Image (cartoon, rainbow, N blue to C red; front, side):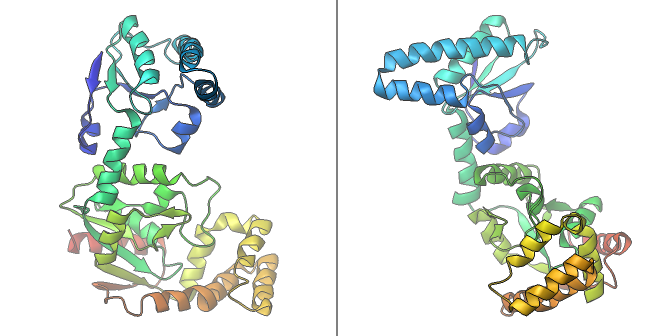
Length: 348
């Protein structure tokens, strides 16, 4: 069995293992895990809770004995199931919470089978410390530029076109599974805060710091997930380009980008109701009526004119001028692609 001590996140890209195995419980794995890891628990959630209770209320010896039996049974299940077809040359990396008994027991059995096993020293905690160091304790080394603009200016789609044009991008909304606005929740639940940070750290690790990286201008939160301090500080200091487009073009784009809301009347009504603290009942009633009658372009125009644009203008009143203003006649794919190509050529 080969021990591994991680000293930087960059080392993850150089691992020569075939599979990263997280043997923690499903709940621990769901909260966060190393990039690309699979979950083969040696103790499931209820089992882990029972063993922990026994450790405190009965004795450590009794808990270890029961835990060992559970680990052995669960390991046997994994050997008969997900690992049954692994050849002799397969090389796994195994870790648990802190590189202790759970991963040690599992790795020992795999090692005795004859596989070349790597055991992560310090477990998940050692990986998490590196994420915290990169996103909380150090200045971000990457060169950041922002894509800004009012609601409905296709900022996220512009990021995708920039990437197609060869630019580096960091899609925070994609990593957070949220489109950033009150109407931005998707059908997929947001990751935990730790998982969001792992995704950011992994994405940044694949980017070249010396090249410009485009990021959509966001508030400090994307949905319910907080942008970690090192990235947020870099974003606040970053130059930006600002997209402008006619109101009707923006409304048309929103109707296309949020098409699923048009098919879910109840959800759309609930989202509009969230605006009641900010607008008169008569205004809310008008928006609800437009939603009921399917007048979605007018609804989008009204929301932008009355709610979103005033807030965007207020937030940017004291911001430095953008390094470039993009006045686009529409927000169709061809227009965005051409604008992205120009930006990629002009800013490297």
